[in-house]
Image (cartoon, rainbow, N blue to C red; front, side, top):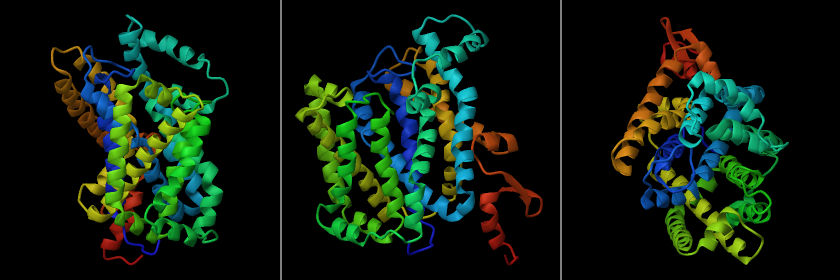
Length: 407
């Protein structure tokens, strides 16, 4: 980009994207769709929230991940792949062993009439998981073994695929002046949604299961665009000028989607289990416009209104990955007991969120103090510097710049 100034709005956008994910999982016991635990009483309000946010939440996370990949490649250079392996794959493998089994245990208690203890469960769980019929489809294994942690190996796989073209972009060997001209036109920004529409239309009937290849290639495009937007500051400036347009398009398409889904069961089927045809095309175009409009709205809005520092911003960005790893397991563990209480769905949702997320943050505070736990959760190691205080290596340069020492 043309500036080396810290873009605080991107940090805020990342916190929003993952913070919404924590809220999303906290209300999932109360909608009518299948999930790891379910409350006896469901609410149409949470159905609406699930359908609305599911249309763009992961697209936003992958766009933010593409942005982060730009900066990571620029700062880590030759150590980039090793850094991605540590930050993404190590936590995923650790999560399969330590974080995910409690989720499955409470699933068994709720849905499979399991009456044994956790040790008895663990004596049969690994064999049950590895015996699943997923074949050679590695993407389905990501979700089966890692539940919510599927995002980590997904992102690593995308990174491996895109590294060659990303390196060309960062070296200036690929220029996008023509794209700036296209995006500057009234509706030009929606040209970028066309590959997402094509991928979903062609692949979703063949791979209808969530997080299978259809979703992979749909999510790949926001990831690439997030990287591309950092290559030229003009891209984000164009998006900032069109924020109102994105809000209008996102609102209209979302309302249309919710209306069609509530009045026509065939539309829901066309979204979840589509067959080739005009209905599938209509649903696909609408769904991808929802995703792209809301992603660009939040990017433009945050770029205009949230480009400022706050004392909580840096700690939140550093801790967001470990908290993401922990949060769903704690939601399920606490939620299993909370949904059994005599209270309404909204009260239970507030109780789940207000217990699971603070405990996730407290556990992160313990994780960050230990070398082994930092490694397992993808955090950079600690280094002893500056009057014996331990600080993150990622913060060390900034701290030394403030000290009376010339680097």
